[in-house]
Amino acid sequence: MSLRHLGYIDLPANAQPGGFDHAAIHRASARLYVAHTCNDALDVIDCATDRYLHSIPNLTGVAGALVSDERNLVFTSNRGENSVGIFLPDDEKNLSKVTVGVRPNGLAYDPTRNLLLAANVGDPAISDSFSISIVDVSKRAMIASIPVPGRTRWTIFDEQSDVFFVNIVDPAQIVIVNAKDPTRIARVFEIPVAGPHGLDLDAEQHRLFCACDEKKLLTADTRTGAVSTESDLSGAPDVIFFNAARKHLYVAIGDPGVIDVFDTDAMKRIETVATEKGAHTIAFDAERNKVYAFLPQTHRAAIFVD
Image (cartoon, rainbow, N blue to C red; front, side, top):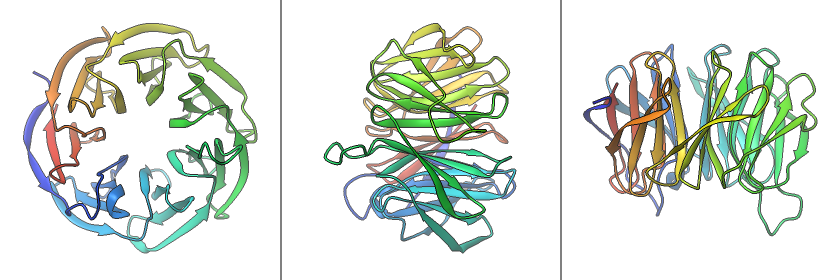
C-alpha cells in the first residue's frame, strides 16, 4: 500500500452547488491554499497540524492557487472576474488583482523574471477568447496576450529549459512559451490522446506527465515531445502531482472518485485509493509526503501520507 489515510479536515460548507479546484502549499508557513470555487474563496489549511485556519473571500469563481516559495508569493486565478490575485502569505489583506484574459484557470510562474502565466479557458461564445496571459508581477500588469488554438487546461514552468508548457484540450496539444520571449507560442507538441488535462514535470528525467480525458496517462520528453509511455487510468483525470522523493505520481479522478498512484520508474499503477465522487482535485505536501483530496459533497479534505 502507498497512501495511508490519516483523517479529514472539515472545511466551510458550500455556499452554492459545486466544490473545489486547484491548490498549492507554501513550504515556509506549511499553509495550504485551495480554491473553494463555489464559495468564491481560498480556504487556508495548516499542514503541520492538519486544521482549517480561515478563508480568503471575494475571489469570484476562484479556480486555482499557485505558490512561489522563491519569491514568497501566492497567486489565484479568478475565473468569474477575469483576474489573477497576488499576495504575500503574511499579508493576505493586501491582495491585489490584475485583469487578464477570459476565465483564467491554470497558473505557472517564472521566479527569475517574475512572470506569471495565466491559461485562460475562454468562452466559445466570445471570439478569440482562448488565450494565454503573461503578467509582470512587479508591475502588476498584463504585458502579453497569446492566442491559442483551443481551450487551455493546466500549465507548468520548467526552470531547466526556461519554458512554460500549457495543455490544450482540443486540438490535443501542449503549447510551449519561451520565458525569454513570452509573446508567442514557440513550439507545439502534438498529443496522440484526446483531452490533455493534468500536467506535471519530472525535471531530472526531462519528462512531462500528461493525464488525458481518454483515461490515459502519457509521459513525453520535455525537449522533443516524443511520447514514451501510455498507461491506463481509472477514469477521466484532472489534477496530478509528482512526488520526486518517492517516485510516485498521484492522479485525481472525479468519477468514480479515486486517486490513481503510479510508480514513475516503471510507469505502472500500484494503487487506487477511494476518495469521494466528484473529488477531482488534490494537493501535495512535499515536506511531509502528504496528499490532500478535496471532497465536494462533504466539504472536507481527506488526508493521506505516502
